[in-house]
Length: 116
Image (tube, rainbow, N blue to C red; front, side):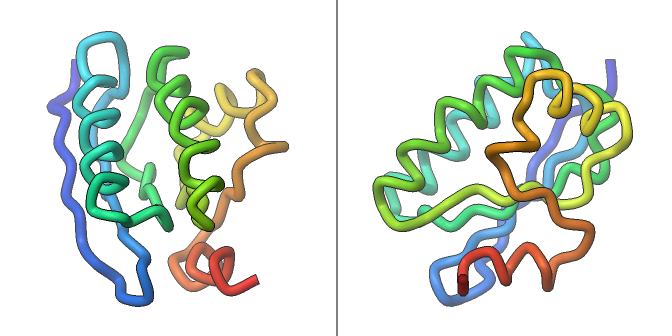
């Protein structure tokens, strides 16, 4: 198991970047879920989640995004996924989540999701 950690930074214009490192699995998904709910409680609904340092995501981890997405949209926000690793992208494709979430290769294109 890899060390799980998160860092958040405010990007302005209501956007927040959450950088996740390590596995998102049955042991760690609740931490990510709590972080997202904390952002929502602070009225921050435009989330960019950097997954470039996440080598593995379980269905429970993917479920965090599935659960949070409607709440973000109901509040004029969304969740953009930034630069997921191939393994993580494969899971999202398998679950059909690439049809729902915007997946960006760089921060500028992720930010652009919120100005459309």
